[in-house]
Length: 302
Image 1 (cartoon, rainbow, N blue to C red):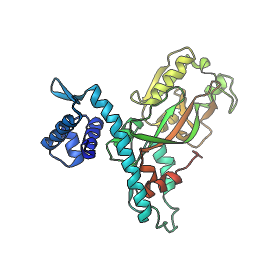
Image 2: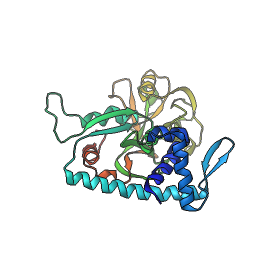
Image 3: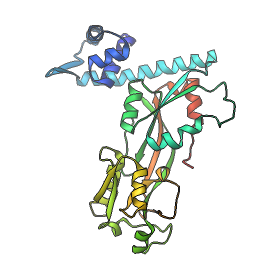
Image 4: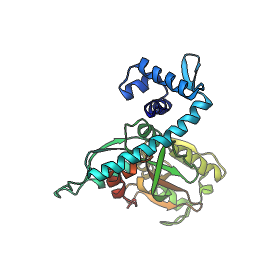
């Protein structure tokens, strides 16, 4: 089978339509359809089927996509090894990162102000994305590294054709105004039992995020469904509301603002952790520019 046609099939699996695949590969729609039809003839199996007006992978097509990821990963590894032999450490590395990683981790990849940049370091380009969008950007070759997270209560599967390096794990804390903590007889830094907060107003992350599902599951494990006073996509908003006594919130350590007198931060008696990961397409970690960035990514949120 032609490797170029396997790449077309893998791109179709990642993007979902012939039109999106053609844009990604800089081909016409008919050219993509011809490549897929030729691959079906080579495989002597139906790889795609129409459901209504949309084209979908068959079971055989999905199986071939799985093999294509392995083949393309090996090809990427070969290309990376050749780049090492050529001494190519330059180029641009595109990073897709969730908000707190984009704010805390990625800036550390740039040199300190007033310090001359290392000529061996690649040029960096950052785009802020929640984990699902970061993974999609990686699979669609719009990013070279995706910084994502997963919670101990909410494991996240590794996307096909990708590898992962876990940078660190961090605890999730319960955050509230000191007066709320005092009402619950909590001294500073005392562990909090979520069961004691079943009747408190809650400040929840955006419903479209894994952080929202984490809060729901943590409260569910404690035996209640939280009543939301506010829902926001920015942990800084939830922290500001907690500092005004509007409610309590579950916030990972890296997303916490600097502790002030209006915010009481408590570990959980039943701990919840968030893992922070760097994802990259199989075989690309050996490319000098990508390896350079992976090796310099912080392994702590502090």
